Length: 185
Image 1 (tube, one colour):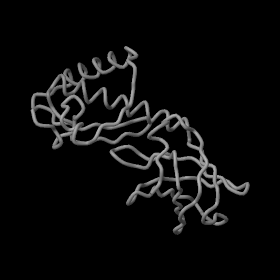
Image 2 (cartoon, one colour):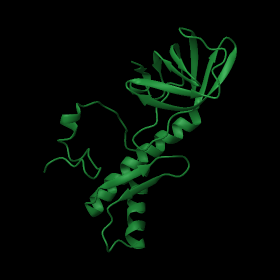
Image 3 (cartoon, rainbow, N blue to C red):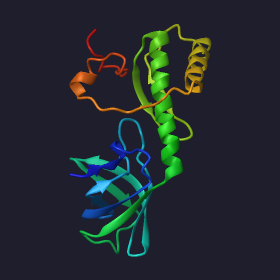
Image 4 (cartoon, rainbow, N blue to C red):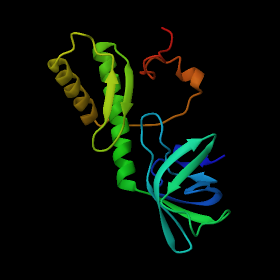
């Protein structure tokens, strides 16, 4: 099972780890700061270095508790080898900002329309958010939501992360904005 370093420090830019598996052009590490694709957010990219050679990390996915780093090539890497991982920091930081903005947008949409999010795709520089818009939803309504979201973002609210058991989180309506996962009222 891969230790997920980004859960405790999303600002971690580089880390050391040991290769635990190599399959084709993918490697698994005992620990990683690379965020794997999921929840509408793309994976981190960056590099993994070993023996004076740098390998590009093209994408990262989580499967059965293991995080797999897809590389352009793995020739020259070996099982048990110590590596240095480096996150493409500018990309990560922009995605973090876009992710936070998406949470604010979801809260504003819910506050203004009482409608839930039905899907999203976080990317940089453009992201997408889908929601159950009322039939009467107009360009004016969209502009109102955009203005309110930008005002909320400009306030400079403190952002913090914390962990809750899923069962407890599902009981807090202010945390759940996805259609089909709404907690009981």
